Image 1: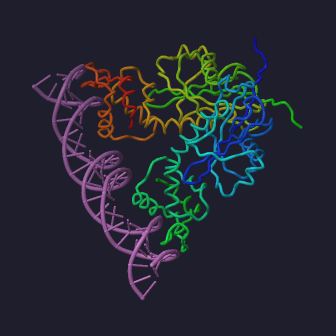
Image 2: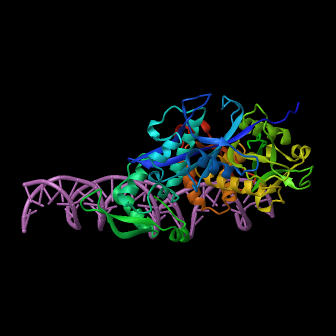
Length: 221
Length: 221
DNA sequence: ATTTACAAGTGTTTTTTTTACACTTATAAA
DNA sequence: TTTATAAGTGTAAAAAAAACACTTGTAAAT
């Protein structure tokens, strides 16, 4: 009756970037059967003596070269028939990265490509579902935790920040209400310098001060 | 280099009940080594052709006799050394049940016992951490989804409901504010009948109308 | 030098939501 | 008839969210 358990455990990474005012996802081209030619999340198997969190980071590095990325677990997908190549249960992790630090040339080496989330190619297995749950989680969390700053350079402007939020939430926000809330966050520090590239007037740069944030631990946008 | 993956996959069930105005947890006595004699969550291994959701339900049935319980995945614990008996990754599920439908005699058969969450015995492995994350999730969700009704009989009074919320959230709520919110929920239907067991005046019974709720899908307490 | 074009920046009012707070009522038991 | 007690009820103040339009600073064009 009892037979040895034969289930493989994998991780899949859902990597968000931001570009052209749109939320994007990093996918890799699948070069082997089954589902060869389709696109997939960055995934791989967990090592025998490897924490699953570590596995997610290693797999991400192996397939994309990305290192030291803070990822959070999203959820675990465990339908018996979810992977047509055999029994695989997969735990998903997600992260937000600055796309400009992971540019075209580096992506090229790895058969990876960015896609706007509104315009994803066909994904293997249940990866679309994984993406869906990660996006829902992101939208829930982005209003209450200062996680979106990972998608921006260290210095950013308020118009940039607002467009980022509008892109993530997929809704438009009132500029004055948005800026009022920002101005209540003391850990969003205005710099003297202005970004003159987007307008004649120029927009002040801001930075997110993590230390100051850690004293308040209070975020709401 | 590459060796065959040898990771076992398990599920652990975090079963909440409510009693004496306190949130309780159903635990089982561990009768085998390692950690024999301690208490643990209701857990077991996933079958080779079994969805992990189904595994959670089967394991719950096997160890407690509880059937047809709606459970939701919480998160997956995958530290390499979390289980001293070998490499086991475990996905947790949680449910809320009506304790009176799972009473002392039935519990007895299964070496299971209820414990108030404020007063848990020592748990094996990382089960305390699992419980912690399930409680945090419960407290987050209970204000926005009508899940607490699973802990009450079909007919319940508003004083009962309020005490339930106070127990779950571990804070006291203003009676009038609480009742105002309830009265805005058309799917909480007042019955003619009163519960005379707790007071001279008696408290009206209410019921949660799921069909009506599904038309609004809007909950806030 | 002046004008022009345009994104950046700025406050107030209204509405909604949340919080705080104390007395009356219905009934069983004495 | 009285008493004891939990159930039930409304209003005002404070805080948060939403709606809404004009001024400003600068580079480029004239």
